Length: 223
Image (cartoon, rainbow, N blue to C red; front, side, top):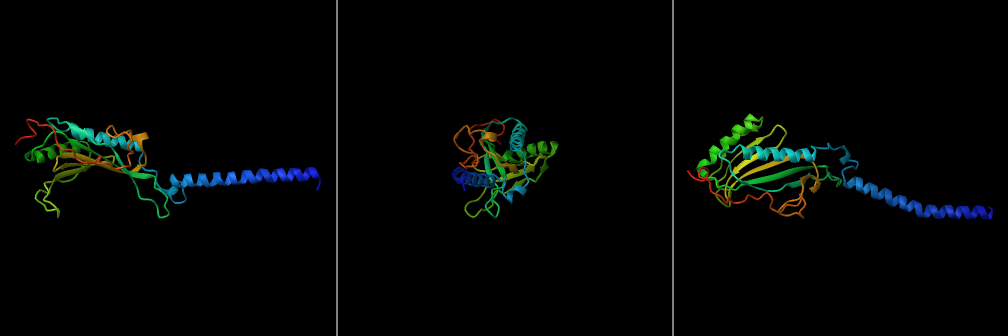
């Protein structure tokens, strides 16, 4: 082999010695990214789920509609979103879907004598808007094993799948919603929690906790 040919071969091998490891690292890195983001051999067959922006708007609409149906009107406090990603596949691949939760607490104190009336108002609203409405449930006096509950509730499912519950218990009355099968997303869709701006939506920090009422109403707060 001529000297020039040997030089060319050495240069080619040197280039390959640098390029091949880089290509290998890039391939491995790309594969890891695909695996972690739901494009692995198992997860890529998952259904994509409901668009997260659409889910956010459906949840907001369900809460606003329920609060707006209460007459006389009451004030509420706004709990932020909690996003729970669905369990990973058997091989560790993350699923692309999640369940999204949100709770609004009524700031107005509702007297227990008005619980069924409040539930009836919401049941009428839900039925008029195509919800599938469950029956009113009264658990007052039931022993949970650690305390005697005072809970009453009624639940409904909206035409677009939002499950909403009016829960009346200590410390107060709340509207709790959830939606399954939603594309997993974070603050780019749900925004930042006004109370805890640095918190990710998939980190639970009591945003579903029911707040105690802080206001009295001449109708709702008395017998």
